[in-house]
Length: 455
Ligand code: HEM
Image (cartoon, rainbow, N blue to C red):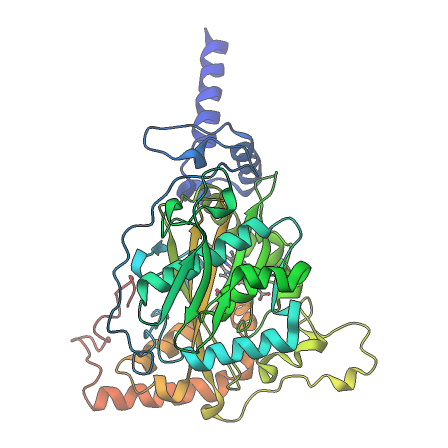
């Protein structure tokens, strides 16, 4: 009797451990977590009613899904000269700095955001594309279908959301030729996107013609990246269930380079760049999220950084020269003929030189090829402008002070903290004096306890 009970108990413990929802995994000893992780990957997927095929397919396989993007509300009076960038301010009061996925659902109308920075950002994207070629945009061999789907979805979204800025034409639909099928936004019967007219820049891209003219150098990501303000990364699942960066247009990343990350898994992308606490806090939930993401559930997240110059594409003063830089050491690349050519970043002596960059990222699984399209829009402001906003200096200073040492290093804090923090403290005191920031009876800032965005 006793051995049977012991066996049953052991089976129950194993069952509980292996079926724990992911949010409880942090309470499981670290040594067990890897075993559970492996098990979860190998585990046959359970199909529940109302779930999509995402749950049943094998890693690396995808059957095109019929998905109709929900109706997009046209922004008929959108004015590219006057619409201000959305003021994302995703820094939170301390004392703890959150290292989490930090994702929330993405409203369908807001997939690709345009604003009065459009002309300037697209000009930078064009320049980078011209100057840096496949260091700015690339599609790895074998991933053209994913890149084409990305281009097609972006064109159709822009034309539906900003109808007086963009229009598309279509090739006739032929049920027997998959290349002629439309996308999730226009519907399959509308036919594939043939061309797009951009009335903001005056560009007209006729894709059939470009495919012929450019031949083997044709890259859909180049045009997807020239039509809007976001950097784009197409992530494709491999046969082990790992998501790899297989196509992209990266022109305004500021502190990382496409050539270091292309072809890499999520794990390689983040660990080679030494993203703090990736293995302990992010890897497991991120990989699970990617494997499980459904076509009908796009998400978004925000982050923030600082740099000590006003360069959106690559911050030389914060990183050093782009083409001499090494991502592993974040210093001069090995084999440089003269290390002295590399100007090592030095702390800034001026508050006015500190710029705030915040990314709004979205993740959507595209229905035809099943790839996940990661979009990264960088909003970029001098800190001296940001601190005019009520509540910002105090909250920003507190957020920076909540960074653990590794985060402070990663975000290059030693290059600007000595000029930034004292000035933020001064401005916070002034805002209290002027009544722009209110305190409670205990002298705490009102709203400090708020833990959900917008803080
Ligand atoms: C749920 C999805 C993701 C999460 C939660 C996430 C999280 C992070 C975090 C926390 C960082 C450190 C900087 C920061 O504070 O944001 C980071 C950096 C980075 N992430 Fe992700 N990431 C995600 C998806 C992706 C994807 C799909 C790519 C594909 C290209 C990517 C590429 C990068 C790169 C290139 C960096 C900079 C690494 C470096 O410094 O070298 N991330 N990510």
